[in-house]
Structures are given as C-alpha cells and as structure tokens.
Length: 217
Image 1: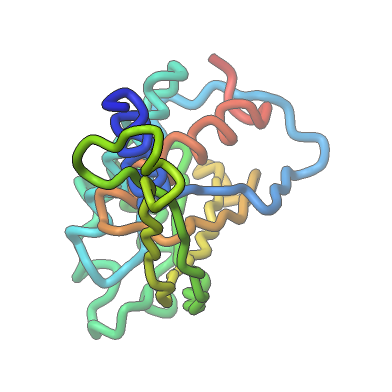
Image 2: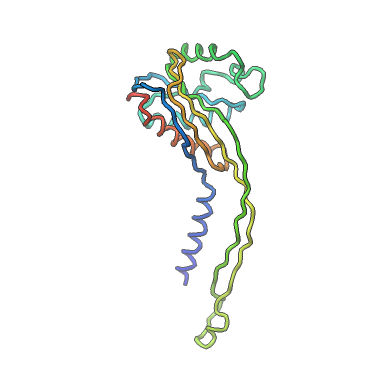
C-alpha cells in the first residue's frame, strides 16, 4: 500500500513540474538561396528589447549554447549599450541607426550578427477539469467490512489557467554586407521566469542555427 501511495505522489509531482516547464518550438525557418557554409570568426548575439537585463540574460544563454557547437559567439550587450540602440526609450531600435549599429559591431571584429526580437505575445485561458481518485480509509478493515466503504473517493476541483506565449524572430546577418542570411520564427510557451525562457529558447535556437548550413566549423 505504501508503494502505491508513493507512486501516486510521484506521478502527481511529475505532472506538476512538467506542466510548469517551458517549451520552445520552431515554427519556420528561411535561408538565403545559394548560401553555403562560411567561416565566421566572431558572431554577436543581439537581443532587441528595452530591458538590458533581459537582453543580457538571453544573449548569454544563446552564446553558451552556440559555443557547444564550436561557434565563437559573444553577447551583443558587451558592445552596444541600451542608449545606443534606443536613445528615446520607446523600446524600439532608433530609426536610421542600422548603419551605426553595423559599424559598431564591425569595429569590434564582429562578422556575423544573430538578432533576436520579440514579434508578438499571446495570452490564453483554459479550464482544467477536476479529477477523482480513490484512497483507502485509515485503519484496519476485515473481509466482512470490505464492501462497506473500505475506500474513500477524493475529488479535486477544476480551475482556470492562463498561459502566455512569446513569438521570437531570430535573424542572422553577414556583417560584411549587412545581408540577411538566415531567419527563424519560434514560439516559447508559458515561461514562468526570464531564466525559464532563456533555458528553453537558447538550446533550441542554437541547435537550429548550427544545423542550418550557414556557419562552417
């Protein structure tokens, strides 16, 4: 009986933690026709958001995962300041600053840039129905009393949950001519924290980029 109770608790907690983990899916990719793998000496990962903390956390996670594939990458936040990208504080890269950004990266020895930008945020609500399961009453029951309620029914109520999904565009540019070489669209489902988003998003986008046939090892 103790073994049954233990397995029930284990299953319950496993389901709980699984439901709280974030999942990232790639919904589509594009690569410039005729592209062949090239050697890039330094690739900057650049997050475009008004939060420097968000940018740095996500960039660092992607950089770490790219290095596992033998790709030399650095965090763009180490080169470009938030004020340089968004001097008016509206959360968007300033108009007309593309050339300045490109030159800043080139001056730092960057020959490729992986730019991450938030495209959309969608929230949804769903109802999770309640469940019923049986558990023995405490105490000892003989055979004669078995049919008189040796087991108790426990009902858990239903509840509503809200999920938030983030849609990210990841664009890779050759900084020699600022030409778009590769692009991916991804969806990260209901991250519970910034670190949770980074740990879900980074390995997926790094694997997709490394296998795209854009960068030669």
